[in-house]
Image 1 (cartoon, rainbow, N blue to C red):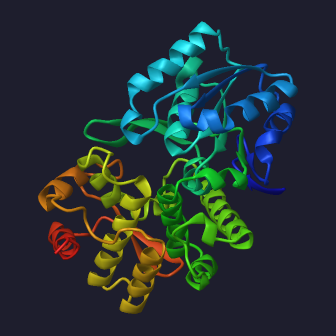
Image 2 (image 1 turned 90 degrees about the vertical axis):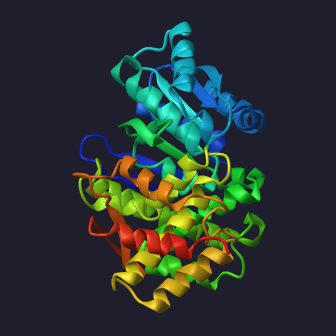
Length: 365
């Protein structure tokens, strides 16, 4: 087992990466004094695959388990879904000592985490991510929330998990498109933080399906990504400074997701498009060079991810949507821009003209 610590001053916690780790979920939770009652939140497809194994592990460790299954998909990440979790929590008398366990991808984790943050003013929360994107990003760091019709993740809270259990074996059932979505976040870490990770991804023959990523590279991907996220969150839990660089590719990516109703592209695809846009903006502003931009573009393409805007998307609507982004300060949109491969900066000095020009260049011919 590979263990990484998120070293927060008030409540540090472990990220446990282990093949077969799902079978040791209860054993991993037992020493943390999380109370007896557990509400396992998942979606129907994932519960059919992994729910019984998770429950069996929890019950072997002495936990009393109830379950809540929510529809799969970003468009269901709403307050209505949170209400369903609350109703089950109330019916089963979850207490302040109880725990909500998220078994799923980023959508399940965000909703289960928000419910845990707000039920009885905050109860224990454990993440068991089943997608690559959740393993390397969404499950770590305590960001929880749901979408508002006008923007992504506008309703939420910081609520750190007590434990993150990553079982790489569950990725064998992950659809190829969802695997690629996770690789987008991995590429993000390479661009903003980890040159070694970026170069190892460049050396891979293919990144577009999990079957082409051997165990050694997958272990590198998980370890480097989780270490990067853990280090950044440990330095800046509530995104007052450094943590903002984790939003690389997300500003325009979130706008595209929202404008397409969370149906046309995955989150990772939105991030990939957003990284291409942010790289082009950085190039236009003289923040990084053509060679770095081309290397990023080539890596995104190798992963089978999009590099152009979805057909028919109105650029003016994207620019307008940016004003609803969580990262807007004093009416100015804050962009994360790369300065070299392995480093990035945050700026609010990107003009609307530059944004429009870059987006026009990214339109499908």
